[in-house]
Image 1 (cartoon, rainbow, N blue to C red):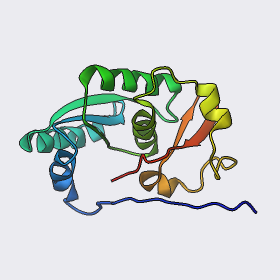
Image 2: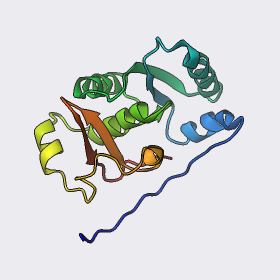
Image 3: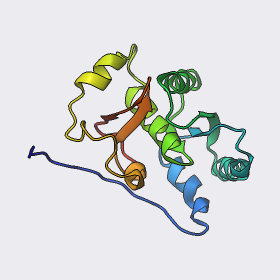
Image 4: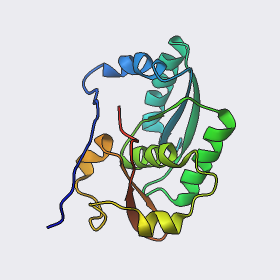
Length: 165
């Protein structure tokens, strides 16, 4: 068995009406936020996105909404989000939704400062003790630094220091 250390700091805010805390949490990281979510055609979630945007606005946080995430997000989706983040010069990222939105946000956070991403190197050479496992548990997606994006099939990589808050 391989030896490794596992470090996973996370603050998870969960429960009824806890969405009201989003503004206080996000404003600690800056005044311009990128909201990353599933595609805007998922109308049941639209009211949640609108509510979060209003909460952020009330706290003086501008919100840019990247709403192009699809299940098992592709590299192209991540690259479009990175391009938007760079153009808008946001201070922080807030992922709303399930694992695909969260994985996209982690990848954007991890790679936004890399001028040219060598995806082959990321997928084939990234040091990660969980590298051989497609995902330890779907439930842990919100609280770890690993991200899962697809090219032709689902693959994962581990981030260093890109943690959920």
